[in-house]
Length: 214
Image (cartoon, rainbow, N blue to C red):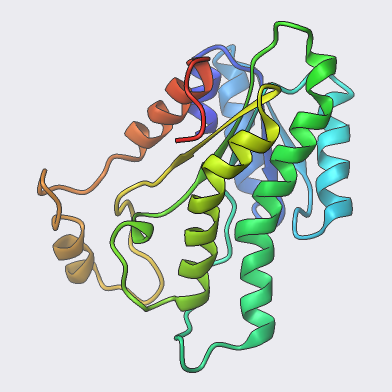
């Protein structure tokens, strides 16, 4: 995501919480190629952290796009989910994206009268391919998918809101390599999804001013 937006000419802020070394290395690499990227530490699991992140970024320049790609992914089932873990995943996977889009809308007037602002919520192929594993995670992503069109109505015209539901990209949780190879080919193209294609799709949505709510 960061690389695709940077190569498209965007100034990128790469938010991290635990993966500081990776974020700093990525941004340093992008800057060495003449691209604009800065790593910024923030805890988006609570509202104060989200507000501080937006304030830090907008102190430098107006913000035009937020890509909500962070998520909590913990195994549970509909029979044995822990209420605390479920609340944690709902907070990161649902409340945080909705909050960051709202914060984007609140600063949108500062971006200029003709500015285009966009929030992109990264979903999951599970929302269109239901199975009950990772129950709380799946519920949170289902709610976020339903919220895309609703939030587009609520925040328009200041902010466009779209969602992207990638197919299977990487091994996840306890999945074996063999299982991944089988699952990643259970689609019409019979191949795993290229992460670069997902990133390009996000850049397309961010730069196409006529698309919202989808």
